[in-house]
Amino acid sequence: MYMYGYEDREQNDWTVKKIMKWVGGVLGAIVVLIFVFSGFYSISPGYRGVLVTLGKVDQKSYVNGVGFKWPFVSSMVEMDVRTRKMTEKTATYTSDVQTAELEYTFTYDLNSENVHILYETVGMDYEGKKLIPVLNDVLKDVVGKWQAQDLVSNRDKARVDVIAGLQDRLDKRFFQNITFQFINIDYSDKFEGAIEDKVIAEQKAQEAVNNTKRIREEADQKVISAKAEAEAMEIKSQALAKNKGLTEYEAVQKWDGKLPQYMLGNSVPMINLGK
Image (cartoon, rainbow, N blue to C red; front, side, top):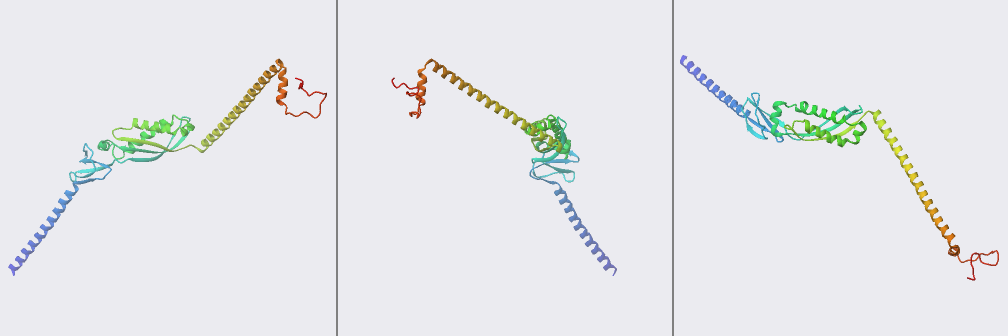
């Protein structure tokens, strides 16, 4: 009985060891698989990768695709290098101290070759730290050069100035292909009403000027016409005075060939039949 119990216990110990060995093998395989798969990275199309190993940024940007990194100690950060579009609103002052409410769109591309430097020096919040502050400063400078009424009618010139300012102030290592467009420029209702009244007054004043010019032109034409007619009559009078026979000729030219029904005397007026 004693021997039988010893053999049974020995068999059970062997079974336990076998199970433990099997479990250990499975766990080891899982650990190896986790270790291996954690070493793979994938970068999506339209992105560039930044490799960070124990807090140190690798000095190059990685193209999209699949690769291998050090498991657990390295991480791959994806940076979006597709064209970025921002639609924002802000307020600033014109040169005549009117508050201009601006709505605009702003697009740009990241320089994909330098995203690792951008990540290392600025981080992921580069828009809030680098772009927006510079954009607001440029808008203040450009809008501050225009009077409120002129800004509305010259928004394209202002847009060109904004783009030039952004290209000059933004770090060219990181930002490129910059575009800017005003969507809307608003002022207070009181100021817009004053502008409308001013435009109407200017239109009426111009209309009055145009009417004055028209009246003066018509008067000048009448004077010219009267002078021409007077000169013609003067020339004609002088010709008649010098040649009295011309008077009879003029009468014949105007005669319709009919004799008058009533006549004074025995001769036809102004016609010498004998001759």
